[in-house]
Length: 541
Image (cartoon, rainbow, N blue to C red; front, side):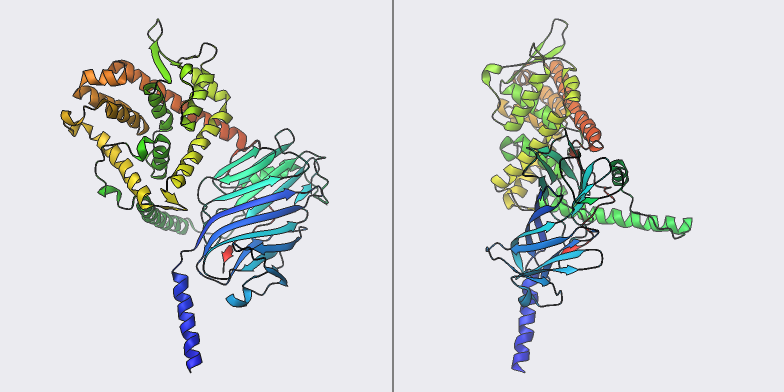
């Protein structure tokens, strides 16, 4: 009786312990070396929090002639797991601790290992895959789903690197497409790098499609078809359809119900998401009179994006142009016909902020030999330099993410108390600038703050409104701060907004033109049909 009581108590304690953790997949990082015969050595890194189950498993279905072998697993303590061969999913948590193995199924395998205990873990997994590269009639190809949809928790960050020791991958003899997630696919230093830019959703996956010129590899596996056939199916993303007859009335009712449910779910999820960033309801935020994040435009811009508040395009560029003018990096003048010109104070060097410096460099290159940026020059330059523009936007986002962690504003997927406070200050400052006319003149006489009001007004997309309010309060102080009259400043705002739109247009055109050509760029959330590997499910069980 006493032994039974102890076992019951241990079970209750284990259940309570599991509830103390929140399931999470913080990061998945895959490193895949492609070998001469078309096989691959795969290494995976999983940074996770286990809250239930006895094991972790990866689904690898649709293998056809691919064979997976030599499974090895280690954890954050450095322990190398014993590979027991055929895995038994019904064993206990204790039995599975320190062990790994493979479940063989009709269409593929499951790679499994014991989680050991609830809580945070970092697992390193490696295995070999034969025949991942296929010889086609005209090219060779790799078409693999490396991360499956339906994981037990949505992955927050995913990265895949494909490389080869004896050859470099670039667009002269290779093409690459990415499907199943929101992010990028780029040729970087002789490798192909796939990176997510948003957290995975429940049905997100990572599907890589690569085309190689003949002669790069000597694959042992072949398929009697042309690459275009593979690509067409992948771009269509055809998953089949339900051929069951459904009445129009039933279909409309089902659609209406689904739409209402989705709207309700989205509202609830959005409110919870916003509250996780702000630490309160948005409507409870009051005025905040000073720039947030120590006036960091890159951080402020990124938080506006997370909060869904940057609805007027790339306002970061508009704000940084004003700041560079006030800091003396840029100069504003008019040509003999009265048209606004922007020139460069090269003696001052580059701005200290690397994102600001990147914008300055693009503007300088667009200005031509006379180094005076005239109307429409940046639009013409950016349309022909989409890759550089895209890289600048990526730099701004990655730099913001780095600063959030470096300044202890965010840890993993959670914002710290300090991070939530600064996010509230950001929206409070925007509310303050929107209601600026309600302020008394005596509260708005500090010239240094006025400069920041105009800069952040540009970031918020309300620079013209802020400028008019400041001019109405004190015209003389406004011209002193803006270093020009109101009409000239209005033209400057218009020009900077044109430059911002040119950045977005260039980025959109670059992403669209490269997504179908395999030259790198944005991934496609849909599509990718016809892959090998992968399947559905995985994670904790």
